[in-house]
Length: 108
Image (tube, rainbow, N blue to C red; front, side, top):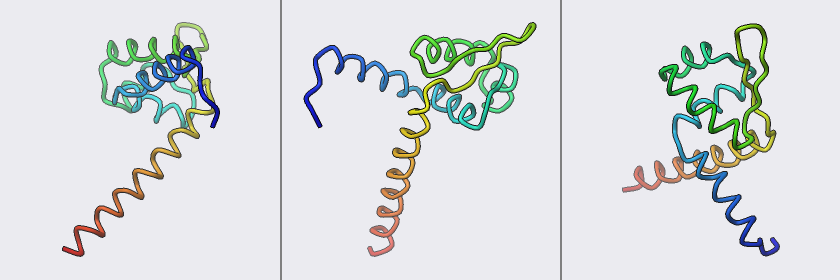
């Protein structure tokens, strides 16, 4: 891996900061299954409409999601395909670590 410039390091840190919020991860997880409206996201995540809207704004400004207007409704979808890859990498690794931890506990 080549050395990153300080500017790129700051950009990477900002992207990870966006992903550090559980509510935003929950919204992204739902959106990975396909396009949703705010109403859909409220129903599927259990978050309030104000909370969903606020987090969608952060995700949109950060380039993680896109918005499409249709009449009175805005439809959101994952804009960056690397989000899916990143989630897969992290989820698989965390699953492996959880399994390793279970095995160690069972050996005690």
